[in-house]
Length: 194
Length: 194
DNA sequence: CGGCTGACAGAATTCAAAATGTGTCAGCCC
DNA sequence: GGGCTGACACATTTTGAATTCTGTCAGCCG
Image 1 (cartoon, rainbow over the protein chains, first blue to last red):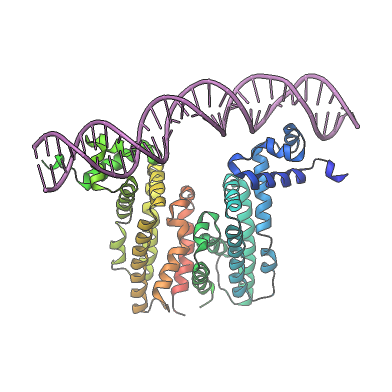
Image 2 (image 1 turned 45 degrees about the vertical axis):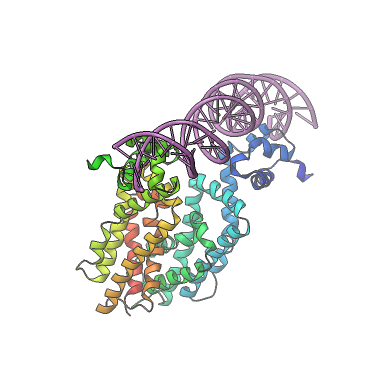
């Protein structure tokens, strides 16, 4: 049966479960192996180290939390509206996760913080999506931008407060969405042709 | 002699010295008292608690690190140039401190992180200065803004990456100033009348 | 063979006992 | 009297011995 073969996929699921239960500080490879009913040596047949396993979990989580974005990126709305909606989606998904289960979210902050390679790749993906929206805007005459990737990076940097997990403590503020809107207003006006 | 009276001022200086030497985790009130040659009970005559003492140190440090800003705020340059220069000053002072003595900077990050009241007051002061620059710009026709404090807050939020100590690890990037310039470009264009 | 086990060395973490720190206050000294 | 001391109760931190974990590998089993 499929459930009896030990795959990276099954290990990742068990690892998430263990992390959820014990938190990032106490979760061990032995716990993961125990949850799967195998010896911990087997886990090392699929992941080179505990660090690699944790990176893979972080990667999976980032994929999941960014899953809604591509639909917005290639949506039908005009670029300025799409850009605002994209930023609100990015912020909204993360805030929902953070407020829904703060402990689990804290766990993922730690994992992602350790996985600098993974996070860099993820940011590149986000800049790519933003670049596409901005390029669409330029094509339609809604935006006027000299260097599209530079502008895309600037937009991501300017909204760090609203998507970087290190700021999640401030996402409980009921005013936070209005603050994001205020920044969007400024950025959108900055992109528009004059 | 003035040096023999125990003043809050002298205690704060000793506390900074102790924090510099032992770091935020190991510095104790007993250490501070020892450095001053008094019993630790005397320190409590001037500060209600260890927490209050640490807050006062954080406050002092924020004052010092923001000391250069008022001169920029009320400088002679046109508002757009002044705004850019203000943001570069804020970023530059902090980055210089962070790169010059990373351990001491880490100490201050911890202290300021504990002192939420102090940090809120400090942010209010920064928003006030930004509001003044933006209001000047509106008066001169360089900016067109509906709600000046809202715009000021948005500018501060959009540049969090460049002045919030939690992002200091990224300030070593040689590209960081260009990134700030890219965000400034966007924000200044967003404030300009059309 | 290819994947899993279980024993192992060295590194990291736990836990309880001992030491140190925090905050208070009665009394001393200038 | 106003500020300082030093002893105290309670809380937090250190310490080091014992446990547990990580990563490896020779050998087993299907």
